[in-house]
Image (tube, rainbow over all chains, first blue to last red; front, side, top):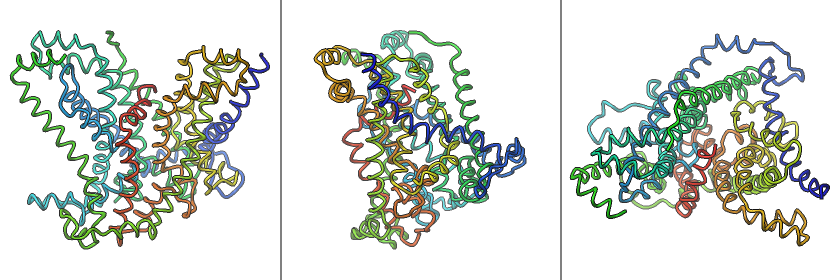
Amino acid sequence: MHHQKYRLIVPFLALPLLLYGVFVLWPFAQALYFAFTKWRGFSPNRPFVGLDNFEKMAGDRLFWNALGNNAKMLVVLPLVTIALALLFAALIAQGRQTIRGGGFYRVVFFFPQVMSAVVLGILWGFIFHPTIGILNAALHAVGRDDWQRTWLGDPQWVLWAIAVVAIWSSVGFFLVLFIAGMQAIPMDLYDAATLDGAGRWRMFWGITLPLLRDHVQVAVVFMAIGALDLFALVQVMAEKGGPSRAADVLARYMYDLAFSQSQFGYATAIGVVLLLLTLALSVITIRLTSRDQVEF
Amino acid sequence: MAGARMKATRRQPGEWLAGGGSHLLLLIWTLLTVYPFLWMIITSFKSDQEIFFSPWTWPATPQWENFARAWTDASIGRYFLNSLIVVAGSLTLTLLLSAMAAYVLARFPFPGNRLIYYTFLVGLMFPVFLALVPLFFVVRDLHLLGTYQGLILVYTAYSLPFTVFFLHGFFRTLPNEVAEAAIVDGASPYRVFFEIMLPLAQPGLIAVGIFNFLGQWNQFILPLVLMPDPNRYVLSQGLAFLAIQRGYESDWSALFAGLTITMAPTLVVYIIFQRRVQQGLTVGALKG
């Protein structure tokens, strides 16, 4: 019997573990070493240089530029996306109110989420296009030619244009998440609030939001991790980081260093920074938002 | 419930106005979501002159040849096929290997079980960008760079942590009785897995399968690094190549047609399975 058990366990685990070890664990482990080497990919040996890559980073204007753009996205993307998703979720499904067509809105709002960021980026690249784009055409139609811009060609706007796409495509995802959360809130809380004469606005702040805390926390972590990536959108909408690198982000800069400039060691060091930022953000968010759990 | 709602409506006369305001906001967002896609589809039937001079109008005559040009000249057809080959392979392998590992880890106690389970979970925390450079060299040294097999194996490996985690939870909740009865009847452990447990796990496999299908179909950074052969570009990679590197500005209409071709299957699948797709995707957030 015992023998038979292992005849199943060993082969069933061997192949998954082999693939996972070779393509996931081994590269991650190597990355933690590569980051401390100066390696251009040509020589077989990888000279160990200690913290040189990280010192270089400290003085690298392009690194700080990319990090700064990530930081702006870190503030704006979670805030705006979650605010919009909460608003729409509350309009559709708070308490006993069920809006007509709620299911329709949910299906429509969610759709961009299933499309690849590349398709969305190219599509919005056309929307922002200075000559054939509908944004400038719309501004022309309402007589605001003075508001027209080159958008993705304008260092002041390119990052925000990308932020618009990131927000636009994520709102539906969090809407569905929040509606699922709202359905778990006991109805008698809303009934009691209604008896007390509370309006929708007060119910939202008093009942819905506190009881959705876990969901909002998950959403913040998800969106923050998304803001640290943005690779596909930036790559498609702002080639080489956009005009004056105004939309460059760490992921794209790192990709560029590695695969266009063969600075493999330095690029991997930036990957390590991305890892540390991801971990730090998850920990901070969970600490900040889980002070007191609301029980019901 | 309907009665309670009506009573509430009567008590608050402002409710109707609030409802109207809600619809107004929701309809604005609907328009903002739908119109870009609609514009894309309409534009893909236009000539380049119409795209340039009349952004708002319908095409005078639908230019079906835009789609033919996109499919053949712009290689969208080939990219499509490449994506299909890669994702068919990686999705099958992901579900099979994850189910095997998750089943064993969830239902058989043995020394090292927890350790292996947590080893899989660790993979959820690391951003793929950290592994990118070493991964490139691992794949190159295995002579898998630029091959379908390489992408299939890498997609599978990076899908394992979440899929194992998800199915592990699923297999734990499955009842024991059927499997035990089969074992008493002398069924081999393999038959128990393939003929009893896998069919029982079907709802879980579908949910996590949708999640992985979209993730792998839309994957961009991995093929960008691991698939340098233009003949084997996958769809998102090929589209990005057309849009940027080749500066396809000279043939906008074909690029719009390419976008529409790319969107069409996803749209159809989404409309048919929208509830399952939403569950499949959000399940990651709720569980994770």
